[in-house]
Length: 162
Image 1 (cartoon, rainbow, N blue to C red):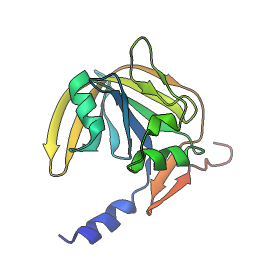
Image 2 (image 1 turned 90 degrees about the vertical axis):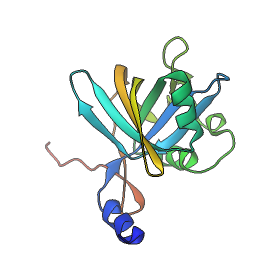
Image 3 (image 1 turned 45 degrees about the vertical axis):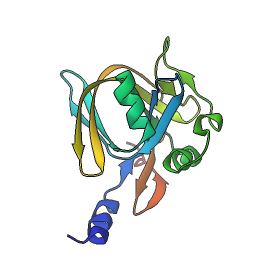
């Protein structure tokens, strides 16, 4: 299989954009932009994310056993870009707070919804690791989500009257 053909196939499938966050062993926040996210089951509420196996965010998730899924709104493109590239002090560039006492980082300006998850399983596949998370709690407010497809960011445009 040609990698460019596969990349073109997957870029034709638009998806929401999230920043997956955790706290490392030194109590420092870690995070990475992620568009590989889906619901697995409602009972118990479980989702999955896929992260690069060499990611410091994944290392923090392994160590803490917890992670947050911050769903970004349409005005959060800059934040998606910050967490998708090797930028120093990502969390110094965006407002955030911990969700609950000692919880996972919540991007309070850029996420319209956040899920607080406990690791339910990990599985390495090629260059990435699938992380299953049991959702322990959520916080959300209405907003238009940020999307990524055809190698560009966009926004959801709801149908009129819907």
